[in-house]
Image 1 (cartoon, rainbow, N blue to C red):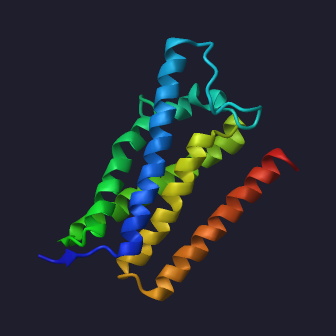
Image 2 (image 1 turned 30 degrees about the horizontal axis):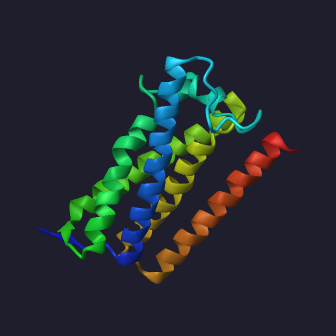
Length: 180
């Protein structure tokens, strides 16, 4: 059986990203529950007309599979944390772990791109907790591509450039949508 030993940088990135993503997902799930219990509840992440979670969590897009999207994060981010801890411990795992992780992060990346479009151009508001998830998923997706090539410096550099480029594009889209 082919095996894989995650690099320390990648493992630490999974751990940290997983913790931030889980915290955002849990918080958003709790806020959604409070809102379901009390329709007048003011979400902690509803700061103004633009940063308005309340405008987002009540839409169809926020529950695209029939339940709150944040529940996906509550389930998925502990997996990233676990794989990060496995890598930090120096354990070797079957290569299919890497394939599954790459598939999961790629699907998550596509889902995040769709959610960004929905937030900017359909709903017209941004959710700070959702943006934390965006800020976790995309860099991890770029890093898994580098890790897949066994952390070659060339691919790691491309992952960093891809992440920076993605953040700049999203910031430009936000600025163009709300401030220009």
